Image (cartoon, helix red, strand yellow):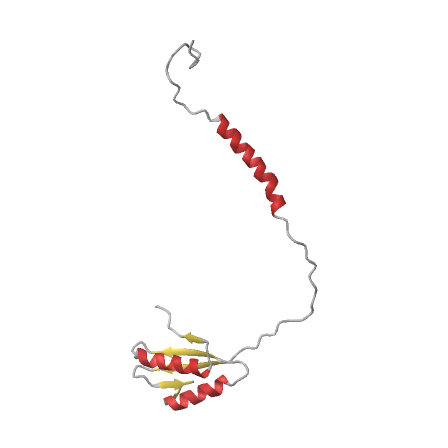
Length: 136
């Protein structure tokens, strides 16, 4: 007496019975639905209230330009490297250190741009922004 089917056919059944898989998935879904709200509890903290407003001091920016030949311009005024370093040191002594906005010609030698950045770093001005023109 073979128990492979009801019609007395001795062929092997090649279909997977999906009922146990669906049962397992439903049980897992119920478990996750019950445990997730328990896991996500947060610590209630009564925070103090303060009536102060944040004041941000706006730092002045320094516009430095380098033309294609490597000449340095401080706020559109040509300066040599010694004067440039002296002005950087003076700007770095301010209470709020300014940001250096560097505008360099595309033909500027990389060495000159690197010197300007190194001089500003040595003076204590760490924030340097590169000014570019948008593509047309």
